[in-house]
Image 1 (cartoon, rainbow, N blue to C red):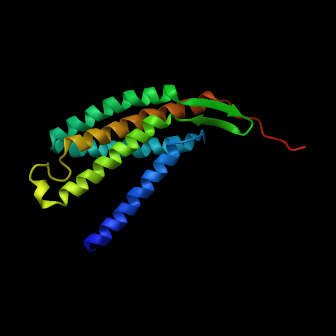
Image 2 (cartoon, rainbow, N blue to C red):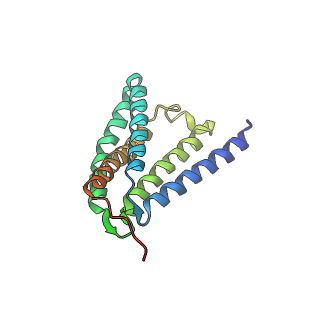
Image 3 (cartoon, one colour):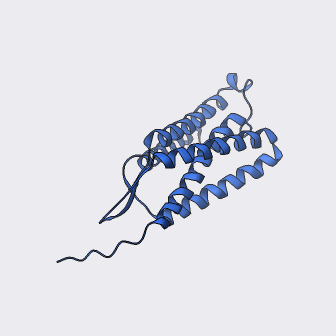
Length: 170
C-alpha cells in the first residue's frame, strides 16, 4: 500500500473513531448492561496486552500504569458527574461531556502527533521510536483507566435498577 493511500485510510478510520467516541460522550443514552460488559472486556484485554508489552520496556509500563491510576480517578469523577434517570422508556444516563471529550481529543491528538513526528526524518532523532513513548502510553492509560472505572460504574448502576414493567397500549 503506498503512503498517501495509507494516510487517507488511517485518517478516515481515526476520524470515524473520534466521531463515534464523541457521540458516545454527548447526550442522553440508554443504560445497556451488555454494552458495558463488552466495553469492559475489550478495555481489559487491551490493557493486559499493553501491560505485557510493558514487561519488556519498563518505561512504557510506568507510563501506562500511571495513566491507569489517574484515569481511574477521573472515572470516579465522571461517574459522580453523570446523571442517571428512569422514565417509562427505560433507564438512561447522561455522561459529563467534558471529561470524555477531553480524553478522546488528548488521545487522538497524541496519536496524530506521533504519526507526524515519526514520518518526518528530521524530527525522529529527538523522539522515542514507535511503541516506546512513555507519554503516549500514559495518555492511553489515562483513557483506559477512565473507561475501565466508568464501564464498571455503569454496569453496577444498571443492576441497581429494577426492570420496568412492560408498556401496554390501550
